[in-house]
Amino acid sequence: MKKPLYIQLPVFIAIRTVLNTLVRMAYPFLPVFGRGLGVDLYWLSLALTLRSATGLLGPFLASVGDRHGRKTGMLFGATLFTAGAGAMVIWPSYPAFVVMLILGILANFVFLPSMQAYLGDQVPYRRRGLVMALTEFGWSFSFILGMPAIGLVIDRSGWQAPFLWLTGLGFLTLIGLFWLLPRDDPSPTQNSSLWKNLRLVFAPGATLAGVLIGASISGSNELVNLIFGVWLEDAFQVKIAALAIASMIIGFSELGGESLVSLFADRLGKRRAATFGLIANILAALALLALGRSLNGALIGLFLFYITFEFTIVSCLPLMTEVLPAARATFMATFIASTALGRSLGSLVAPALYNLGRLLLSGSPLFIIALAVTALNLIAILALRSIHEERQT
Image 1: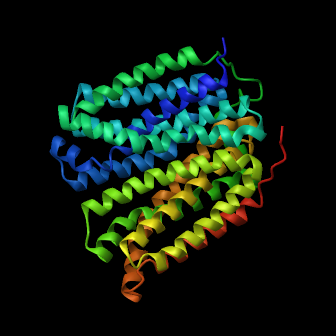
Image 2 (image 1 turned 60 degrees about the vertical axis):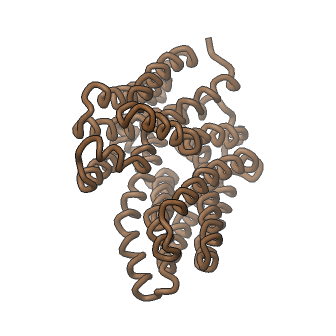
Image 3 (image 1 turned 120 degrees about the vertical axis):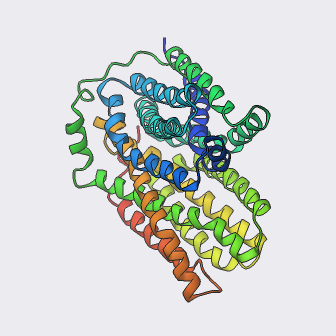
């Protein structure tokens, strides 16, 4: 029996909070895991690089949501998550850590497109902005709630303890999905081959524009992600306290962006909202140049930058669900993979751009970063012109 949406949504938010916690915990607790595993930063960085590269496999695995049904896709994602966390319980070692990172990111890249495709099937387009924004609360909750919980567990029971809890939550997720979702055999239009779906995804037009949008906006965001901590240390000679405050600001700005989408995206139109968000993000990046003259101003600037980015990316999600309805899960997985590609490329060039700005303009080391953010966002704005909101039912 199908459960009503007001029951499904809180469960989806809770599941996404759990899945995202496994993904996001690697960064703040990386030194703790390194000491527990007996490996240095080089090997930890290598593991995270492998995780990022593996994200490009998402479209191949997530197509199960098109070929075998949305419920099967979500269960597959939850199974990958449980296996990844469980690997660290059974064999707490560096190889298991790598397996955990890889399966954790693949779990998200399989579960999320299947869930988004399911909501795309069930929720009218005119209400989809609200619903998709609410499910994105699981991303910010994983930072606001998940990270303190992981820290508390580590403090009381040691660095291995979170994996036992996460494995248990993985089994609860599987049980919850079996209970929550009705059986949904794929329709004849969905039950097509992986390669046919991928050909549809990479055909010229709106689908390629969607891939370009994902890579551009995530790449611009990663430029700031990679350097804001270094910038705060360089500019204000502060470390732990300021970085902790900045991390809290990022978490709450993400929640704020998702809340704004839930209020305004359906009213404005998803494409218009995304365009507005991109323009606002450009202005926020440029404002960092002026606000960054003081620590308080820098934190305000970071808040503005991250809230406008989150508003943009969450506004894009319901828009993308209607780009290729015939292969919705495959396309959403490809869109998410494009954001991973954008982040990988952004992380490669960010240090060089920052060092160049510091060399040429010692008083404004973020200047070239801000110009690069502007250029990438303008590319995304132009690509949005290829995507039309025709289905308003």
